[in-house]
Image 1 (cartoon, protein in one colour):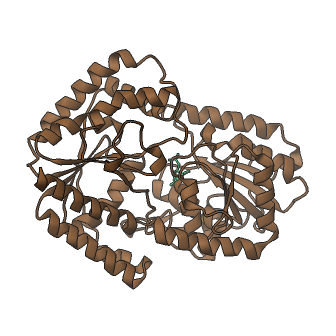
Image 2 (cartoon, helix red, strand yellow; image 1 turned 180 degrees about the horizontal axis):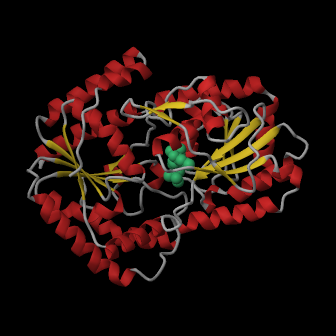
Image 3 (cartoon, rainbow, N blue to C red; image 1 turned 45 degrees about the vertical axis):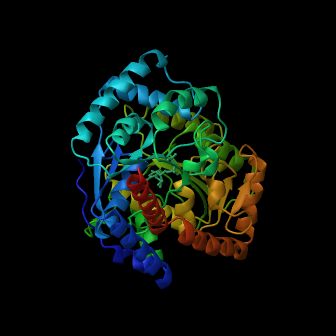
Length: 472
Ligand code: UDP
């Protein structure tokens, strides 16, 4: 069981209009009334690392403050189980699993999830509400439903185009998922074939605007953090940031820059992409865009910032993608090389990492997200919150965030390097337009992609599920 601290809902008042906050607050209280002491269980497969754990860690403390008896259980499993569920995860994204897992998957998945369901069943009561997250835990749904709980399955991943591997994973998981009272996906298009659309609910993710990643920063702090991390040229001065517990930290670690130590000149214009080192984030496409279209623009620098790949065991694919990008960087003309920065941002201290990413996003003149596919794309919402103009491919959840030509620019074909280049140049040449998009982008995120919206939707779901449990 993961400990859940209480976080005052009142903290969120500062980022919302009064009427929006009031209605959010009422919704949370009403859900508490309807729940009437029933426990709301969240079940997932890890307490740390990954988007779902981060989301639960951020949102559940507010639900507790609203008076929900909210709990968080993490299932256990052996290496073979997690090997298989990783394979299923990859298949859902359309990639073939590493070896042929399907022969073993049925027996191992059913056994491990059954054991976990038996353990959990001892703690739950009829009428409890169960929020089961992602494929690893779907196997618990049937037993928990039979134990009298109302169940909702949250699928936090999805793909625009299903292929044979996606369908294979759907076919494997569907019998486990089917008995749930509700299916929650992040986009309508992600609902699987064969699941009852009447039970579908759409709840997109949100960003935590009070975290070190998104907290406000003034110009001096941005400058200080980027100098301290050796991103920008200039005399380093103490660079503070605030940790989630309110303690002040200092940026002391430097970024690792491919091909040398020359930081960006302090007056450089910056085009930025923040992403893991992943083929689908298309770092090489981004380098091509810059090499082919920014030759004459000597004041513009490109930054691709990703997490440090020091720990190769953690992410062997990340290292390979960084190596491939490095090869392309080496092939660039020296004059272009100097203006292309592949940065590994230190991960020794996650709050420091978040502060550096925050400062980069705030310093950027234009933010690009050249992903070829994207589930949601938190980096897009983060940059939009910071009032940045974003140019991104019309893929996955990015389409739900950016309204084309209003709060950013969407490029129809994510492989269209020339299209990206011309949109970026347009924004660099028209700072008024860029600012207009940034203002709209901030407004869009404020309306749709903050925690209170997501919590309000969960409050609605609580009411529905409680009624479903009563009716049963
Ligand atoms: N990120 C980070 N440090 C880095 C690079 C990325 O904290 O060095 C964060 C980024 O700010 C975002 C998340 O990793 O919050 C990536 O989420 P997104 O939905 O964009 O893509 P995913 O990695 O889940 O495919």
